[in-house]
Image (spheres, one colour):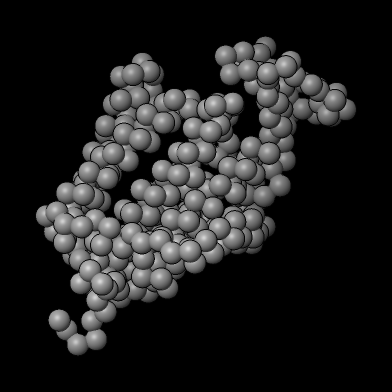
Length: 243
Length: 59
């Protein structure tokens, strides 16, 4: 053990991941590319349509299949490159204090994102109009009603925060922190997280959200708070667009 | 002015800002009628006019 190394009760360094950056990037890339391929293939095969305009059923098929592939990739990476214990390798631990993520996520959605976009809307009012920024969220809920709203909530507030925080904060950010330090890892991962959503006008807001989620990991050394914060952020957005 | 569209299969009605293009499946309403609009039982009315703030969902 190195002097000053911060080991937890499982003998794992809680500051950084046990999986090095190279395998971590490879794991994320494999999970993302294969997950996207499987999800698009399944949606096309099962619903005989393209994936441009997803119904709730298609969204569930698409999201769950991509998550399964990413989770399998994370499990495999833990076995091959980590300790073999995914909860330790990705710092999956929850504590009651993680509930602070609820107001943090809601405030990020209701206050921080609008404040960030205000100058952008002043300079480029057409590009960053609220209607444009709401479009993707609105597309998600347009097909929802009754039971499908519950399913949509499970996808948006349950599954997505869990899998994305495992992949981006638990794997990438913590692996990167081992090489370049927590600050640069936080910024690079937040940018990565924003870019991969492939929505240019959302990049500033998602980067900010990524900084908040990643900041939780920097402070707590685990992803429990970031999962709760991400879930609260999405829940607030879902409620706003449904109301 | 408001443009109303609907879809039977989803049992939903959407109200948007007036769409400049002519579309036989869309119906233009004045603001007063749009405000008093009710949908059949079991249908949802989604008013998508004038988003008050940016909304992001990270999925």
